[in-house]
Image 1 (cartoon, rainbow, N blue to C red):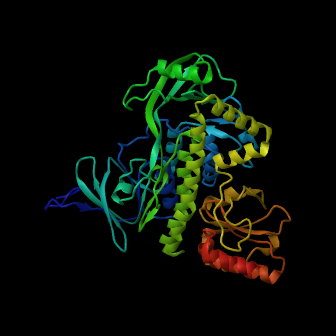
Image 2 (cartoon, rainbow, N blue to C red):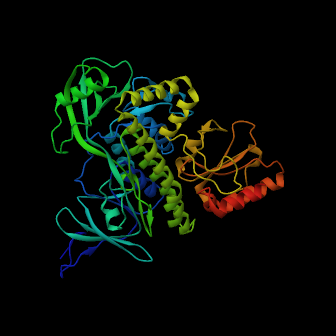
Image 3 (tube, one colour):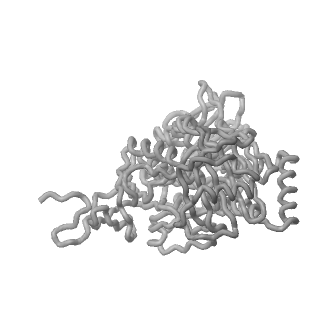
Length: 518
């Protein structure tokens, strides 16, 4: 008798499938990016998704920030995604604060407005081409860990019980994460806004800026231009709290727009609506043994700033190369601890920043609203303040803590440097490995690093003498400005020999490198 994977055996016990290197649970943007990265690195990856096959037609997330586009550029995907959307170089908040992404020091000085399903479609195609095994209609019911791996219990779409096994597991299964629940982790936080409504609509009148948002008394509304004749509207009224299954009517949207923005802009056809409550929550640990959490499974924020999906994509970019390095034997398992050390503070920061915007939107008294208007004008009159806010929201300004005595560049985002030969750094990162950037006359000899093809050597397209080791996720692992050739050469050898220790820009590896370069 021939059995398909996922059937029970003759005794009715769950069937165990062939093992994978990594199981990813959840086929949203975070899970798709991570699974694709791992498969591109040559690992066996199984992606479990509770939904039926097919890309969701929901468009809840709509903003792709500059840092996420840089990560997609390092995978050769950014330009294709940009072509699906509408770049915004100017945003207006609270009727007075003009934010200008056009000032960002990035190849992508804008906020890309594009439906979430476009991001998912692009990442799913890449993951499939790389060899990820997809299992749709797969509901996780529990998991067990041992010293060698993780067993994930799943109920298949046909009701069959299956156990999937892998060396590591990553839960990217959203705010109601079953992986988080199976790990017994709390998800502390609170609901900040009840009954938020989303809709994609057509407008007879076009707002004078591509994105406008304002709050008055109890109401808030935001309009964003998709660039194809459709607009995203987000709104709420703190006095109106209804169950999430209450239908969203066009008149409700018009009311919120009139209250907050002074006009409904001739709202007409409505093609999609959703209602939800907005939470601020973060899990205390991103790693439990051989299991990890990323994206909304680890942290959930208010929609202010459009940072939710983007933060999840950055989680995936941080974790993917570390899992690949450990599974290929290039690094010790302890490297994986740096995922929590680096990404948990970022999730906390996003909670604070998006929460601050929501709290500003909820100010009710006239003195409080006057203070909000003053803060908005202050941003306009002091460009460095507005630039700092945009750097944070876009992710371009995010850096990781460096080890004691490390070079000032260690842990910071690497800009898209021009390299000798007419190439760019983010093109060099497309191989998924580290990139060593040195002056042309100091390129190290082949065979000194032990990393094989996973290290790309490149040279400055200038006379700069700084040497940089850039991680696969585009952050600087190590740098030196040492002038003495012998000291410099030793520092480079040390960097190449311990690149996995320097990879997190923290701990003893970074300390050893900085000492060698001193």
